[in-house]
Length: 209
Image 1 (cartoon, rainbow, N blue to C red):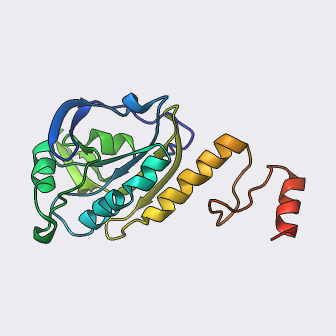
Image 2 (cartoon, rainbow, N blue to C red; image 1 turned 180 degrees about the vertical axis):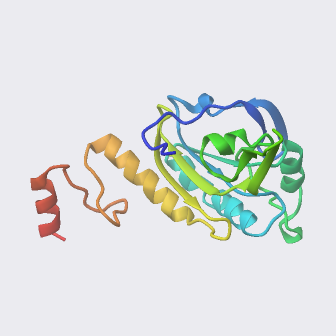
């Protein structure tokens, strides 16, 4: 399932916002027309690689805010598990101090619709349903523009933590393209030269590297 260039799958679910408040009708639609969104999945609360990523996003939250980007996390845990983890000190394995929304995907439907569920439901011979694989989400990350369209995604296997700076680089690239109409070549970073999407533009860029 390729979601690039398509509308981000919609959902309404419970979430914890501001690190301490449960709301029941959270949706990404609230950001359409207002903000870009980085929507990322992680496998489970109270685990090992996951808190390093979640805290790393919070540590760079000012950089996302400067770019008018909303960060939203999601796992298959309940909103109550999220809240408990958010109220646990860092030195006890918690993520206290994280303020961006954490979404509950207890039904696993959000993970399924975004193509990151690390397993599949299967019908067995007697008509019962079984699950094959891990009933958690891979480390998926989706960059969604102000129109609600997915413009970038990356999915890591469970042991592989993400690079938060790469997420910021991709935001910079998308916003530069939106503002200037020029495309961003390999290894482009903010402040570097981009190029026109023509043969002449490519030739000019390569000749001046």
